[in-house]
Amino acid sequence: MEQSPRNMADERDLLAAALAGDECAFGNLIDAHRRGLEVYCYLMLGSPNDAREVVEETVLRAWGRRERVEPRASARLWLFRIATNACLDELERRDR
Image (cartoon, rainbow, N blue to C red; front, side, top):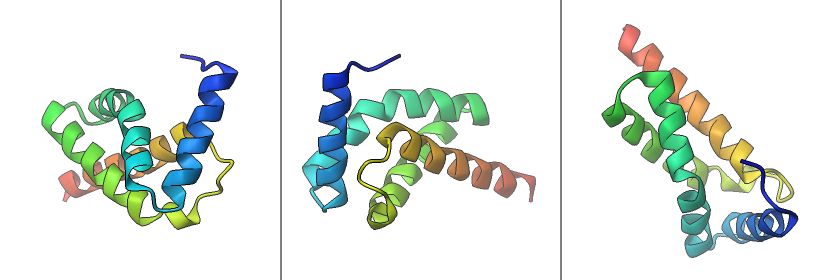
């Protein structure tokens, strides 16, 4: 789904606030992408429970690493990159 320029500006504002440590803005940013992250993780993992757990891991990783993100970055790409790595970690863990 493509965003309108206004929605993109709102998301950039949310991301900037979240990166500055605003927990409410971070929560709103996550809420905007949670469903997409759950679907993406489900497609990678094949389990709805594992997908929900990995999304929670994604949220924790994103909050803990927020100081490394460029404020002009795409929040969606940033979150999905973290989710991809969390899914790959989960798949690797399963193989062991």
